[in-house]
Amino acid sequence: MKKILLLSTVVCLIFMACSKDGGSGTKPTITFKSYSIPFIVDSLVDQFDATFQVTDGDGDIQNKFNFRIILDSDPSTLEDSVFEPRQMPEIGAHKGSKVDAEVIYTLLASDFKFYDPNTKPDSMRMQVFIVDDAGHSSDTITTPKLAILKN
Image 1 (cartoon, rainbow, N blue to C red):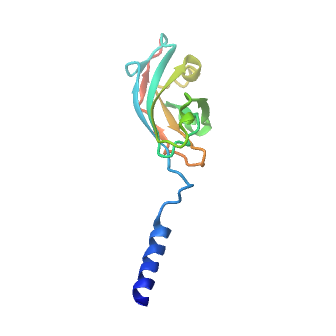
Image 2 (image 1 turned 45 degrees about the vertical axis):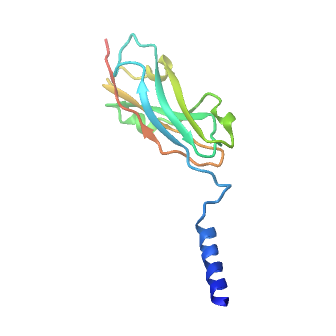
Image 3 (image 1 turned 90 degrees about the vertical axis):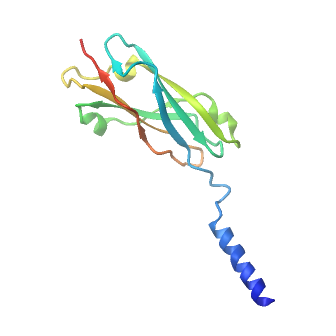
């Protein structure tokens, strides 16, 4: 009887040690879905949308979307650029319940027309991540390239 009690106690302790901490939450995820334009940015494009899927298992997601623009053919863009937080819709209002939302982010000309004409980048893409209130960060994803056509 003592052996059974000892064995069941050990099994319970192992399960408790391996179980997930209820207060720690889950890691949010973000995936790229689509652009609202064909895969070309030219001088006539003043804005376009990038659509993402955002999920968070415990709903403690912040309403911040962190991104940076990477210009190909200009390696300094990646080294010198910092992630800029931008406001997302109030998906954080669902605290305590699972969040699975489509987020459409509108990029304005000021977001993507800052390139130096001397560098002549041939394409651009975005790097994006999100963070929840517990400090868990999603993986940083990189969107597909958009060709840049200059006149």
